[in-house]
Image (cartoon, rainbow, N blue to C red):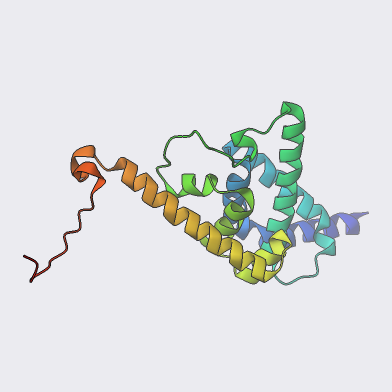
Length: 190
């Protein structure tokens, strides 16, 4: 019996050594998926507990994508459960259809406003710094799908950021009648 306890402690220690360095990444990803700090914290706790229970079966070399894949599953389960309890999706439960909201002020808010498949890939790439291959492993799609989603997300983020900056620009600083500030110099125009 003592050997079983020692083996369990050794496994738990190995898990801590391998998994704890990625706790911040897991939390950042959970915040993108879950939208609230409390839900993100609970999802990460559930993820790490599930991962510890499955750690004996882990045979890979890269634990971070494995953990984040478990976290994604945990978050999807929690969001489905929340949807079932509430009867309709809400913004903080992962619905990314946010038409009537005020202009976002931060990159994080812009990412939150992306459709879920785009928000998760951009978060994994830009916030957590996973490779395209690792992202594909985490979300279970081909690398080419990851690449196209990241390209689409970046385009939407750029457009949203420009729109937010334009709406934040004071009215006095804008040209009258919507004209451009750009003046074209024509030396021979008379």
